[in-house]
Length: 168
Image 1 (cartoon, rainbow, N blue to C red):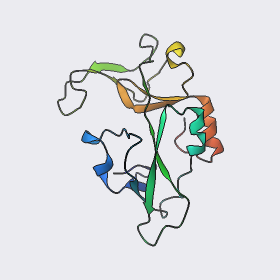
Image 2: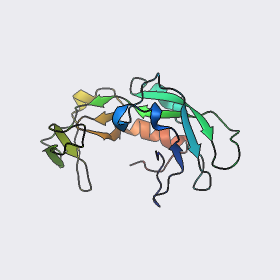
Image 3: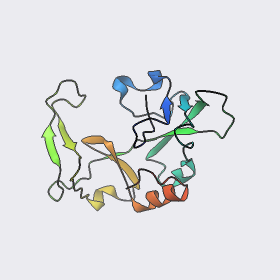
């Protein structure tokens, strides 16, 4: 399962054993998840940055699962890694102020069949209810759980860790 996609579309690290994932490949990792077998391909890019020191910024939102790291060629002798998942989901979108497609899923192949969904694509404008967000620094959107939203504090923490890719 690819985890780290680059612009070229080639993953630089991936989950070697999908059996640790919950059913239906919903990428939501409980803290009790077994060690994650991750493969890093350093020929594609540098190893990922460790963001775990910033978990204190919003500890209820994040789960870190220890990884067993290996390389496609050679052996790995480096720092420990943990797979991070954003587990907080908030229904904080102000639909009347936002611009995006809102629909009812009619495709039975989706887990949310028959339920409301948000299609957050190019041209979308998202406005959130601050009172619902409260002090949260990061969350997934209800009705579009693949979308992870973070505030400027978390974005700054990621940048200070050296991870500047894919931050908007």
